[in-house]
Image (cartoon, rainbow, N blue to C red; front, side, top):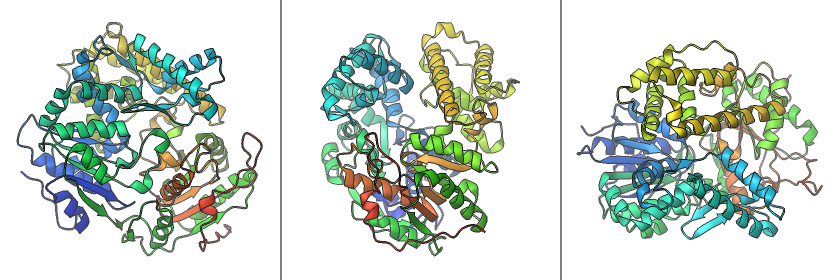
Length: 601
């Protein structure tokens, strides 16, 4: 049965995009219901599949987004059995590398994906051996279809960094290992060297949907375009994003134009847009629209559109008084304006500043809890099997979590299957039942997980010694987790290793969120407090496109809140050369009638 939605579920712009019987390139402003449109399009195309061999593929920027979309589709009553949804790295592994590794000289005899922790360790070792002063930071890179690019190395160290990287790649190849960037380059090499792969995938996929296209890398566009071109019209695409939020340029992401992608893929691509903002007040929308790099029409139409927002900007406070000011703003929004703590987000450009300020905020506001991706006390490597198991270990069998935990269980079983474990007699329900019955009575989080993993392997009858990759993943998981706990403890956070802190990672957001600008993209809150809005931080001092990058970062910050926005460019901070930081230029030049926030009585 073809999926039909109720009147009012989608507006005219969303309906026009979802019902378009062809390829769509959809530019969506913040708060425009972009995820809703994407969800309904996936549900519609899933319901129209006529063969068990056909798939709908949705590529998201994060695993979190993939989970959210999959759950929304299931709540619409549409089966997701023929839906593949995940990140581009997972897509390349599942559909290109694992099935066709035999056709790649470097992968034919097996391979293992290493995580960022292992990458950092190897680069640190190689940098120490380098005769030049090269830091691991200088060696961050990404691949294009033409080779590789360094993210932001010091110009004087670029040649030395490239030499270190060459030794790094040689070592990984000698050990049959791939890092995340090599996943993309290997998939592209397979696609280019074996055109039949694209032809076969083009015959299997009825739709490829891409979320957050503005964060997509050139090599990723090339992989998707090759499949679309080879399908000769059998595979269609639905591409969604906002070029004004393209803040991953230093990592290789950029907003390819509709005409450029259409030419690459050899397709006709309808250009559509979503302009209604359902999130923010008219005042907030008017403010963030000032930072558009690409022209866009945005109209506030949501329930908070007429809210009398506060937008403040403080560029005089000294950085030594910053903590007190953020505490004051938090208290004012909660105690005077009635905003819930979990609807407040504190944003900074780098974890260096956030780690320190989080410790002090926790001490200053003991009555409130704090959440944030950087506060997770264990490794969050999404492709590590033991991270996947930890999600089941640390969540309780509650009704509202059943669908999500079932999906997680399926991912765990699929990972076991991919490394050769025979789990043919274990269903997703069986795995959940086994996990729910394991009782571990210890307070230390890592000890709890270690014992839980042992119990699960025992009940499943898996001898980890027979599957080296499982052991490698387990070692990497705990090494990185210990390093993460040490980092948080050094920042002054208390009870980091307690099992209660571990469980909070997967619990519903309950406290004040602390995040980087990049980490907050895609989220929304009633109130956002952003600090360190300083030239050299926003944008980064090494950014070659500083003006546009600053605009996009401010656009992302300013479009997160529904109601109130507080911007701070504190004075007194100095850079590595002892020079004082100044307010981000584009922010200081914006003439606006900012509000004063009264003191809490």
